[in-house]
Image 1: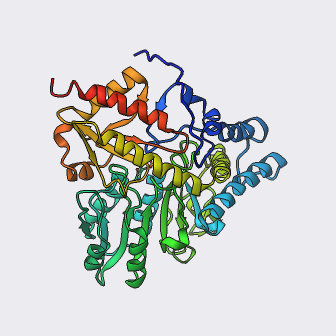
Image 2: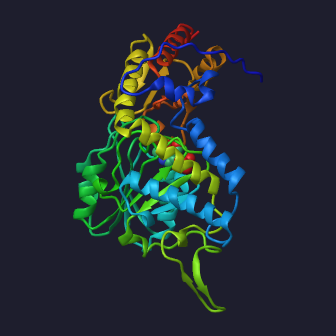
Image 3: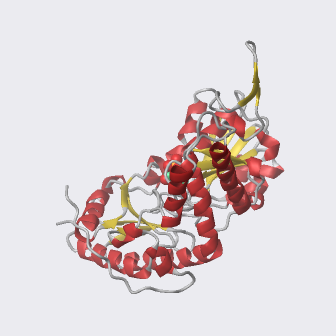
Length: 415
Ligand SMILES: Cc1ncc(COP(=O)(O)O)c(C=O)c1O
């Protein structure tokens, strides 16, 4: 299929952040209206340039060669880890590089020494990446206690408290739901985990880079991060924050080169954390890019991004919600970055396809890798939901085009 591109002329709003400057550094935004930050984000030029710099000037493996080019690659790679650690308020060796959020969660699921009879507490509206690993453990005698969210996709921390008992090994939740945009009570859950001596994992796939997230404040033992979503880093990057006190007891997922300090024919000795978790050659350019992305986010200011996105999300919810036969999901005062909606009697994929065809608007439709969450919203008959998601590079004018186009599409509903 051939896509038509057109230049999008927007009246720029200069509230809170220098939106025009950000847009100038993301050329893709001249061709499309990109409202799918929840899937991945377009990469700003300084991030692309940092990766190019690696490929052009010091393309070597890390932690291996003694020659100057290899040492430079290692230094830049570890500098990125340091920037990330500072950004989330952790120690440098509490940041384990992964290829995405899913891998970070699986390191936790496979690495904890679960015993038959242990239980895991998890909400019913998780992304599959924070659900399937626990369902798999259920097959091995681990109990899953599933906490039901309310109709807005929010769980009650009191229900978590009621579900905890002496067998609770792990409490986990997403911070922001990828299907509804609802924000979960992660700080209350951190208190509950601490009081009950349970491990605590937060899936920050939809909040990292969108809002202030200080790992210490969460009281989490583990936080799974994507590099390629809110943090504006390249695809193929993610990381696991793993608290120092628990990482020594976590079994690494990938054994092999780079993970050991000594090997005999009988046994091996692990490298200290995080190297023991990073088997094989890493996505070196990607993490150097992610370091540049963190610099980029810090230049804009994470507080500014949070404030700006909150306003933009609320505006988007209101504009879609005022359309006669639209259905918006989620509580407008408790959603962040994401508006999930439908048009009565229209399949969500049809709406998304028309938005793309007529105005080059990119939104996601369907089940969003969260089938239980979408069933919770009772939207099976509409093929799931349409999901529009924003970041600091989006603006009100784009939301107006989205709302006007959805309004036009809605006139054909049921026909
Ligand atoms: C809440 C949530 N968790 C996990 C994931 C998986 O992220 P990744 O693609 O980085 O593995 C996503 C992706 O959309 C998500 O939204």
